[in-house]
Length: 80
Image 1 (tube, rainbow, N blue to C red):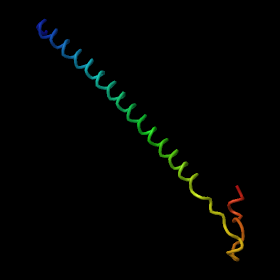
Image 2: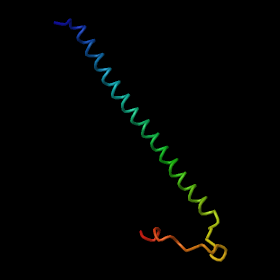
Image 3: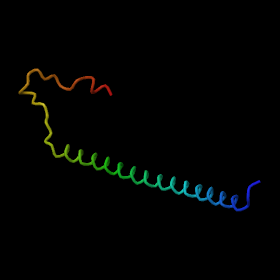
Image 4: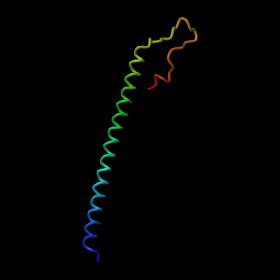
């Protein structure tokens, strides 16, 4: 049988380890959540920036008179 003081010390140490482990796990989850939110914001920013740049580019339409080989849009694009 264990000495009562050793048993109490062991219980205290195991309890502190358990509480510390849970605290560390919750902090890790919180940190990952912030990181994931930051990545999502960067992705949305990139998408919006690309859309604005695409809208600012002049639309290039095929010049039918300049290219006699132009046959119109390909049938595979219209099949959808």
